[in-house]
Length: 232
Image (cartoon, rainbow, N blue to C red; front, side, top):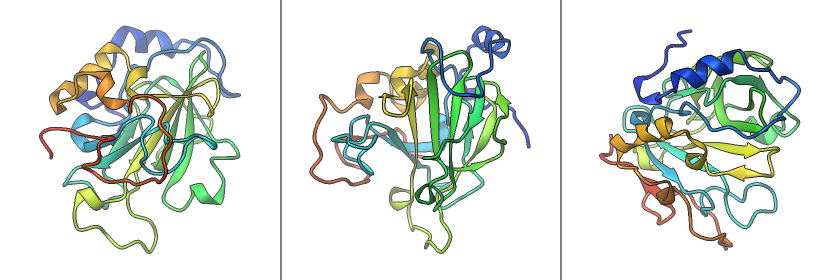
């Protein structure tokens, strides 16, 4: 399996080199929060993303009035796939699973994994992942960790990318109940990679306030879903 980085990932070389020698933390997150130096996906591989605190998907974390994570929609060339849309390590760290990750509800379409950033309380949770790394494996920011799974067993393929299954990630500091907006946690270099898709302001990826959702949906075109331009 190739672990070459996509050019759009914008990894800060000096930070990656330093983190490779940092303390590895297989037991779980501890230490100061860090910024993510690589993107979880190549910006050219997705067409839309739900805003943090949106009404997309479902309430997250448990007890939240909204969805405090980010859902990504694929492009027209990679929807309905399970081994095409690559996902990357957003930081250097160790791949792990906890009891929530192995719950049967998390195994209907791909699997769920944590990436605990080296020497830090920051972690990234990957949902619907066809993993290409093993538990306990140490990865470097920008390494391929797997593929987004957008078609489950027995699931009928979608006719368009807008109606395709999406995939999601959650970034936290400390534990899964303290989620952060993915784009707010990116380094300046990593966030700059999204400019080519029309995203230049972090504020465009956050639903203002902390709204209470009366219902949840996952539709491109909703006010709390940001569509990248041009659509690919």
